[in-house]
Image 1 (tube, rainbow, N blue to C red):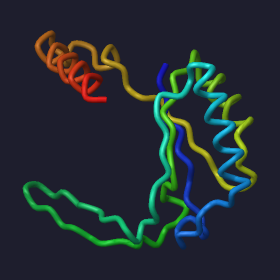
Image 2 (image 1 turned 180 degrees about the vertical axis):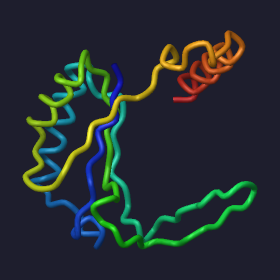
Image 3 (image 1 turned 180 degrees about the horizontal axis):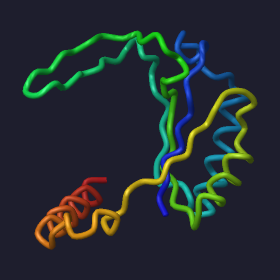
Image 4 (image 1 turned 120 degrees about the vertical axis):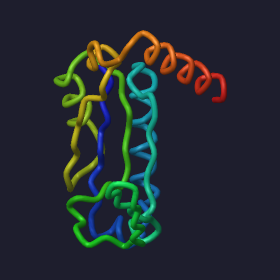
Length: 138
């Protein structure tokens, strides 16, 4: 199963405080463990919400709001995408992460079969073509 591991923002990440060399070293070692175990698909840190925007969709209307956004507990500071056998395995990896404070959320990513009959053979073929093209571009 594929999961997205969401690292929640905190006051420091929202203030643009960069991690220390020690933390970057620990994260690098942890990421290398994930990579060697075949778990890590992707992972990135995010700039604070002050550098972002939100786009609200209401019918055909789009409203853009510049950051920063106030509810820090709802913001994301970074993420991983992992390929794991189970949610329990993902939880066990998170428990080994170097984070000492904060909250980490793990959510399963939809797979094609999750959409049932609504994902017609034509739509599945379209998805497959795009995935192959994306992999080529990397």
